[in-house]
Image 1 (cartoon, rainbow, N blue to C red):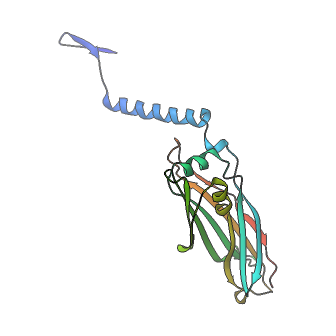
Image 2: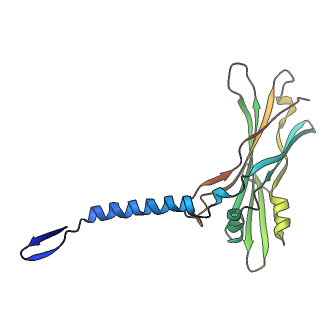
Image 3: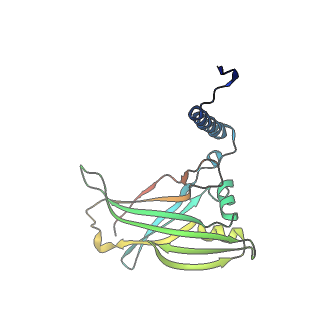
Length: 202
């Protein structure tokens, strides 16, 4: 499109339209990346595995692990990039009420943070329960790191004094792996579906 302005002919520029076109182009590129790029969404789907419970010293203890997680390219790249990566295990104790939704009696969050050091080639790890430090350690190999990080063992939920044999209880667990991982074009969360288990009261 042209215009004659005092004998000068040339294209008319619309700055706003150019910005809009730029946004449209970026949206198209991101959509193409989702369809064509090697994105983590195509990787294996993490899941809760080996979920179990037991009673010890009048307390309910719950254990669970994450499966199909540490072989994902996005999780490997996140850990080896030297940034801190936190795996969060969320466990809830639910009491069922006839005619009502289950009541969340207790919620525990156990987090394991991993950071790789490219100078020492070691993995520094820290464990917290509901924000309180539980353990710190350093390991030498990827396999040692995975063995320690993929499981949460004997999370103390509540005393059996708070549970009635006449009531029905379930425990459910979910594991959160990555949040807004910036090395990929599109950020998203990676987490497992909830896994549920019915309890037998002591």
